[in-house]
Image 1 (cartoon, rainbow, N blue to C red):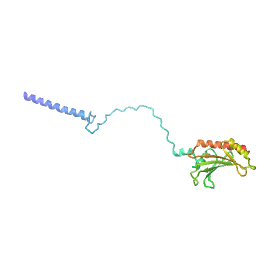
Image 2 (cartoon, rainbow, N blue to C red; image 1 turned 30 degrees about the vertical axis):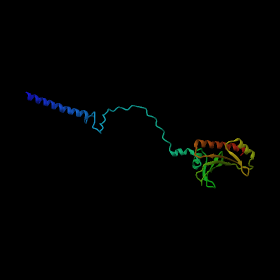
Image 3 (cartoon, rainbow, N blue to C red; image 1 turned 120 degrees about the vertical axis):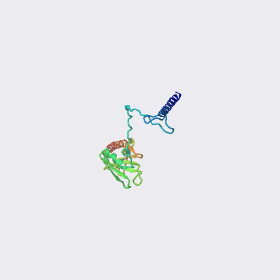
Image 4 (cartoon, one colour; image 1 turned 135 degrees about the vertical axis):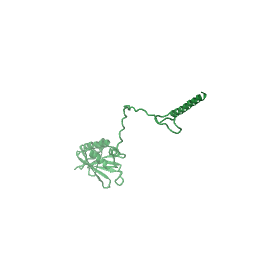
Length: 208
């Protein structure tokens, strides 16, 4: 009896030892089907599999407007350094504009305002390039010219348009514009509109 009891006791102990070892391995080390509570040093246990849920319908923030291309931005500027920009701006307003060069090789634009031809002269140029300023200039060829008093009175009363006489007493009208850094198209359009009104008023003043 004692031998049988001892055999049964040893069998039970061996059974408990094997089960305990398996339990410890499953609990600490994990298995292929699910992660364990721990992992060997230096390793990261796999993340648990989580059920997928439908994303919440949160409103999206409005997208910022795309930056304006450099070419498009440049087209909104008018400057003497880019004579074609002035030609394009005038033609967009419906005016004739022809680009050429003067006797010094600097750019020159021929255009029309209030039915009369005028010239856009370029200044501050370096061998025909890199110009900084322009002048709108119009001349009126009159049989008897006009008098100095009329010109002086105009210059005293008006801001836009500098009037003067040539050696035949023919009147001229100029308007000087600094374009360094470029002029916005809206501003340039207003300058041209003011120039048109000024020329029309001057023609009335001199009786042309």
